[in-house]
Length: 436
Image (cartoon, rainbow, N blue to C red):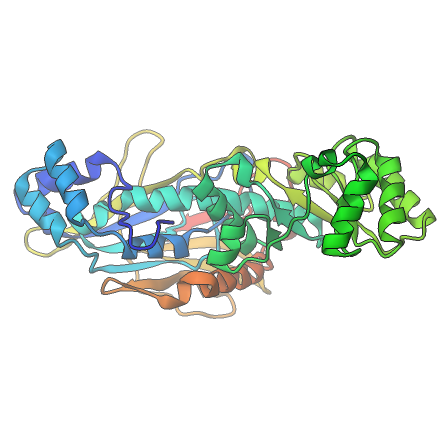
């Protein structure tokens, strides 16, 4: 996300511009071309990935302009020749972008984003697209695993202090569309319409002369329905004080340390004995999907997740790449192109990806190469939708409304997966990818 009115054009690598500089000199920069963004493989052991970042990318695309300040810097730094500076001055992406809906699931080879335009106007977007999709999809994919592990219990994103200040906003957005219910980050709430949550940290309790004074101050300010952090000193005494101060109608307690499973069971028994049978228990403390799954049998009501979520739970980047897959020759004839180097093979040609289903359950990611679009049916769901037409982004994918739509689509898409897709054990992708 850029600040209002700021250009996103230099959020890129130098070689994007030097490629254009060289190709403009012989006219090849203007060849109609097709680029794809995809992942050759999923992070080790993962069964599926979640597409996230589309709305952010489209907003950044709107701001991808080389204004006087960007052009002056490029000129002074000698990055490209004067003729290329002139070309960049009038840059506007004028082509077409199709892609998977935000919130959709993806698998190895899935053409998540397909860009049609001249070579120059599409190649220059490589770094921008990859930086957005690689991070946001990594977070969303981790979030989806955590949501599955929680088995319907609410989760809140609270990782702002464990990543960059702008990455924190992107992470909150990605987690929310993948099923998290709230974030601690206020900018994410303002920008993307995500519900925010949070009450107090240990520092608040330590500010007062006693835990009871701190709890009384919080309850007076926020009411008895608040969440009291009970593990600053001793959990049993913290719970006793919390119920005495707030009464049996205390909203929730939070536990942020210790061996969580036995601590939660003891806390539930103590709360019930004190008459606080409706008081919820939320836990935090460096959770990931495996720790959440380990608490399935414990009386936990909700989870707060930070570090593991915003770092992709061990896969901080989704491993996506951006490759040229087709272009025209000097006579206007289209040619599929692709790499054939070891471990980095690219399947050339324009593609039509389709999710094949049997009785509503997904069975295969079928990618039709150099073929006409496949019609939608009960057994086949085409995956590409229009995101940009004639350089103009789809408004439906932008802003808070776009996030809400992505969240809804993700909930639908994930219901199509077979049950084995939700296993946290290492395994192969839930669906095979086939080229047809």
